Image (tube, rainbow, N blue to C red; front, side, top):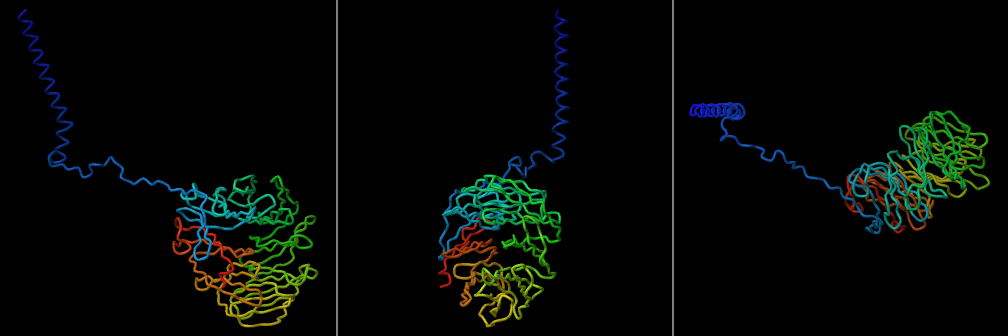
Length: 436
C-alpha cells in the first residue's frame, strides 16, 4: 500500500514538471521572441494608441425648409435655389400665376436631396423643388394644361407635364433625338425633333400621348433655333454653328426647305410691315459681319444687306420697317432693306446675349469686357444701365411692370449674398425704375 502511494506521488511530480516545461516553451514561442524583435518591452512606445478609432469628422447634410421668401436688395427682388454644388438655371416658364424654373444640379444638400434635373416652383417665394431625373434640359413651354418640359439622354428622352405644385402629372418616353422644340399653335402643342438626320413633327394630345406626323425630311442641321406660325403652317429656323436653314411645315404635305445659306449663324428673326403685307427679316452673323435677309410672306428673298461698322446688334420692328441697333450706330431700314436713316448712338458692347420685347419697347442684355449692360429702347430713346453682376446671364423676360433676368453665379456678394454653394441659380426681378 505504501509503495503504491509513493508511485502515485512521483507520477504527479513528473506530470507537473511536464506541464511547467510545456508552458515555458509556449511562452518562449509566443511572447519572448516577439519582445526580442522589439528591443525590450519596456522600451516600446505605441505611436498611435488610438489606431482603432476613426477621427474623420462626420458630415451631416443640411436641408432647407420651404417655402422660402425672396429678399429685396437695392430695389431688386432676389429669388435663388440650389445647394452646395453647381446649379445652373436654363429657362423660366409661367403658368397659373406661378413660375417654373428648370435647372441642372450636382448638389445633394440645401434645396436638393439628389443631383440631376430639377424644377423650382416659384410663387411668392420658392415653394418646392421637384426632381425630373438625370436627363439634360432641351425645351420648356406653357400649355393650356400646365408647364411642359422636354428632356433628353443618351438613349432617348422625356416629356414631363407638371401640376401647379410642381408634381409630375404625366410623362412620355421618347426615342433618341438630337434636338427638339415645343411649339404652341393655338391650343395645339407641337413637338419638332431632329433625330438620325431627320426632321419630324408630333402633336402632343391632351391625354399626354404623341400623334406622329407621317412626313419626314432628311437634313444635316443639328439645332432647331425657333418656330413660329405662318399662314401656310409653321416656319422652323434651323442650322448649326455656321449655317442657317428655314423650313415650312404643313400638316398635309410635311416639310419643305425654303431657304439655306452657308457661313451664316442665326441670331434672330422678326416680322415687319403690316398684317396684310408682312415681311420676315433674318439677322445672322457671317464671320464678324452682321447680315440681314428679307423675305416676303411666301419666303422668297426680297433683299440682303450687310450692316457696316458694327460688332454686333439687334433688330426690332419700327413703324412699317425695322431698326438695327448696333454698337455705336442705329440704322433704319424699310422692310426690303433699303437704308432710310443712320445715326450714332451711345452704346458700346461686344455681343448681344439676350433680348425680349417689352411693354416699353425692347429689352437687350449685352456684354463688354465681362461687364453686362441692359438697354431699353422704343426706337426713339435708348436707356442703358450697367448690371453689377459677376456670373452668367442666360435669359431675360418682361412683364407689365418690369423685367426678369436669369443668372448663374458663384458670387456671394451683393445680390448673391445668400449663395448656398459653388454655383447657385438666381431669378432677379427689376421694375422699370431701374432705368430712372
